[in-house]
Image (tube, rainbow, N blue to C red; front, side, top):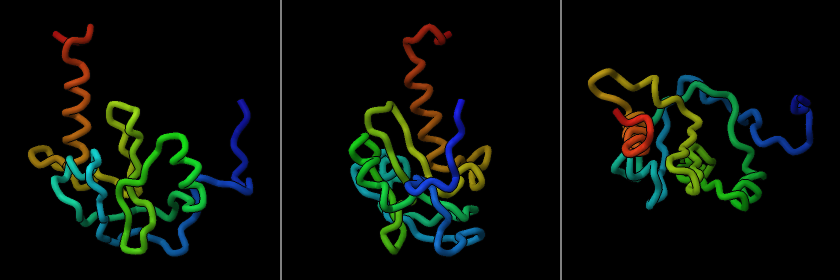
Length: 127
């Protein structure tokens, strides 16, 4: 297996112009989307732990493959992406599970579990 070249000229994930580590920022959600449905809102605040993000130059190429940006920061930078052809594919630049609690799961964590459970109903895994 050949490993990706981190020095390639067309990277999908690149270092951010400034670190987001430790920052809490607003994310604007595009409706309709799985993220907006999970949050039941179009604006949320999330805490970041990353120095890397989706390269905005490749967003059109990813869109051709069916990936859509469903959440952006105040500058319009991608923060949530979704693949609508998949039963439930939501990827974030922030880490939802860090703010999830046993009796108060993060909205995206709850939505993932609900979708996984619904997908299993009627399958060979149902008990």
